[in-house]
Image (cartoon, rainbow, N blue to C red; front, side, top):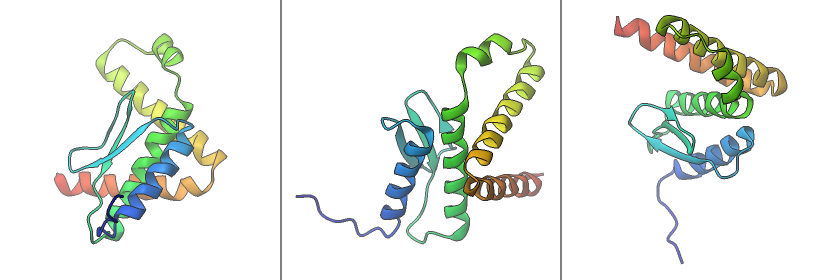
Amino acid sequence: MSKPSDNPADPFKKALAEATRTMADDPDMTVTYSVDPAGMSKEGVRLPQVSRRMTRDEVLLARGTADAFALRRRYHDDGVSARYAPTGPLAREIYEAMETARCEAVGARAMPGRRATLTRRLRMRRTARAMAR
């Protein structure tokens, strides 16, 4: 019998992982949390760590990142993307940014609740970039 966790963030993280799998339409996708940069692979996603304090910013960033990765996984097609991808590095970067925006826009139209979390995530990233300058 497993011992219940004393970390108040665990129920949130479990719920977010399940919601991410459902939104991505991929029940086998792994969802992990880490202090390392968020990322996505064929196997799953790595989301920003949520501490025991569960600050508003941590929760919003984790939700927005989870939504963005789930929508990309659900609406992105590797074959189509590879077929039309440009060859130059700058053109490829712009193409990937546009594909991310497309997946998020399609998902936001299909699931209006995602629009708010994606918008918050973009604002937080923009603020973080401005502060890093």
